[in-house]
Length: 221
Image (cartoon, rainbow, N blue to C red; front, side, top):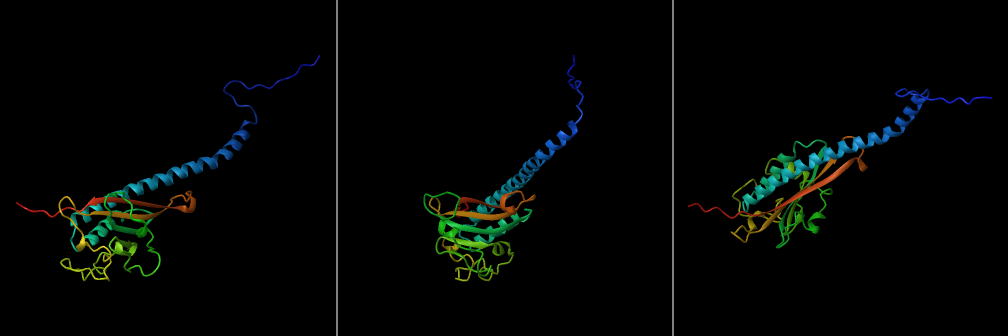
């Protein structure tokens, strides 16, 4: 009579041959773990960039609201944007839009005809926008620290010549009367390169906008 032998493993001890199975299982799981980790890194980085961009847009919105009808209101706002976005890593500013918000429409998104203005063709310092509605600024115009795109840098100028970058919606024509002033919107779009390149396309395009009412003039007592 023959006995059938069975191989059993003692508790807390591995059977012979388990090492190879563990290696195979790890090889199958490793790519998934790497992808998950890379996704967490990239989207966490993008979240941080978006928060910083939102802060820059809020500051720019407050600046242009406080400047109201000042000749260099847009210049001050774009300088605030440039400063607030300068520390972003792996990021390029694509465009910014400052627009007149239509009555009853306070969504922080520019009108469609302003969004379709192409900043990728033509000279980077060309005047762009929609007459009476918005001024569209390129990355070049946002980052220029001098007043070359405005009328001789004259803060007291009483005109917006057609060659001025802010001529489509001239600050001088904005209304900031108490209780019935214009609403102004500031919107910016950036492009961030992923750190690990696991995001489809290797980059993300993000935008943020804000709407403020133009502040009325202060009358001291």
